[in-house]
Amino acid sequence: MNGPLSTYGGAAGGSAEMGDAQTMAAVKNMKLLMESCPGKTAVSGVMGFALGGAFGLFMASMSYDTPLSTNPTAAGISSLPLREQLKRGFKDMGSRSYSSARNFGKVGAIFAGTECCIEGFRAKNDLANGVMAGCITGGVLAAPAGPQAAALGCAGFAAFSLAIDSYMRRPSETD
Image (cartoon, rainbow, N blue to C red):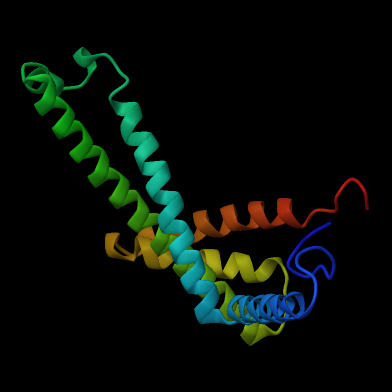
């Protein structure tokens, strides 16, 4: 089995030892990054941005899969030349993808940062951390719509976090 921590395989001699030292240093730096709250927040934001971009691109492309008669703006677009139709379609897909990417990145960064801070403050790793982080994240994201929306956002995101954490923490079939 070859991996970043394996001691066999690769080149022979001194260069293998230097490669292993470099690999070990890289692994150590990645562990340090993922153990810090700013590192977790940044990685979650970037990964959320990437996932949101792919999701937004997929969802935007599905809106062009429907018959033209169901889309109210399709009548004006269908009369344009093909090149202009494609140009407008790709521009719309790009803007929707970017919007989804920003939203997913924001949610990922806020949730991961909040959960990490709560875990560090409580010095525990349990379901309550995710529930509290979910409540704070949902409340913060829904706060511009008013206090009632913030309360519903808090409850909804906390319930979703509880469901996901409960599922992910359940014992595996081999245990």
